[in-house]
View 1 (spheres, rainbow, N blue to C red):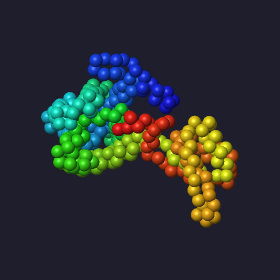
View 2: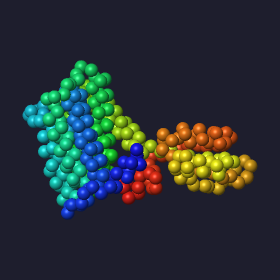
View 3: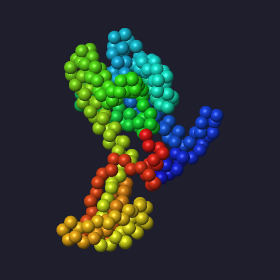
View 4: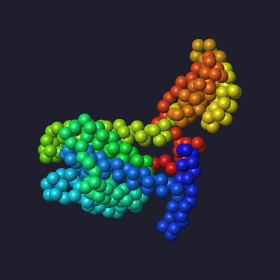
Length: 302
């Protein structure tokens, strides 16, 4: 399945004077739209009705809604727009199209879905955990499209450009300000729930991001290196690198096989190794990201 998606992403669908549309464009649009809908559902169903702010500009838009009655979605879009224009002038156009499109999707979805969705209240565990879950899944899908929803990431990029302050530090500082305002306007309990929601959302984003490209690096020391090499290449369709080592205790020369497999292939590899050489020694290391042939192309890294 992953291989089919990879091939489709490179397929040329349309050539225009403004650029070439490939399969990757449609995949990204679907991810951005799906992520925007999930973020909107998280806000409308779980977070906004309970004064749980997700931080950033969305939290500020919720404040504006309580103080002046402004729609959350449109307010969010209006807040994003001047910073986006400024970022284009300072940093260039490279991230503007996807950010503008995703931000528009999110803003419209928040306001358009609000009258039609139920709300969950009086259940702090449900609206905190499920709000964080939906919000995190939505953001993860947007990130997989190499896009952002805008918000405080744009001023954080500008601060990094002008002052050299890392984006993570700026984002953290801005979220602290938003949570402090939430504690003042909504009370301490909703602000504390917002911190729990943010933690859940961050864990979900990390889990999904790694799940898309989850791999393991495997080292195998065996007396059946030739058979194992052929089995890995032909049955798992994975490459193998042959390393030469020396036993620390015996001083004898050892052949070490090194390969990288998808996480779902790890159990199969363990079974094959145990069948071919029950006395083999193997150890497995989780790999955060693998680039190159058979995995994510180096030319598409972010």
